Image (tube, rainbow, N blue to C red; front, side, top):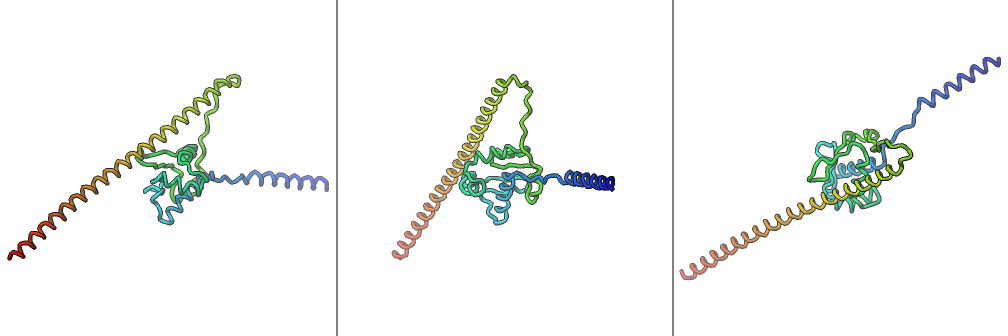
Length: 208
């Protein structure tokens, strides 16, 4: 009787063990990725794509107006209004690439319109393991300083690129204004000629 009880007890223990091993913890996508995806989907659903939207292929997104994106979108979804901070956080994940020098377009193989389930496969970048022994912490610290300097340099380049983009937009606006002014002058000249001909015809009629 005791032997049979021990056998039953062992079977129950092995069953519980196998059950716990067969139910791994569910992996969830990063909150930052979920918020970015939801932001794009809401813009897609309400048709408001002037600030940010999916690209034409649906395998990336474009921030059309960084200023409005920072002012209106970031505080709502991320509790801050720093566009550079958003870009830095995006770059902490493997696979995101800026695909155009003329606009803020980013792509990722797993970041696709209508494929929210793929977000879980996007992972953060992993720093390379140190090749230095433990007693060379000083060298490791120097590497950290160099890395921080590199990040600052990248941020500077990012700001410079954004500044150049704003300069190009300003130049385009100035050209449009010049075109409108030229058109205005032509219209005024045409109106002046028309009024001159009209007055001349009236004088002729009076003489007749």
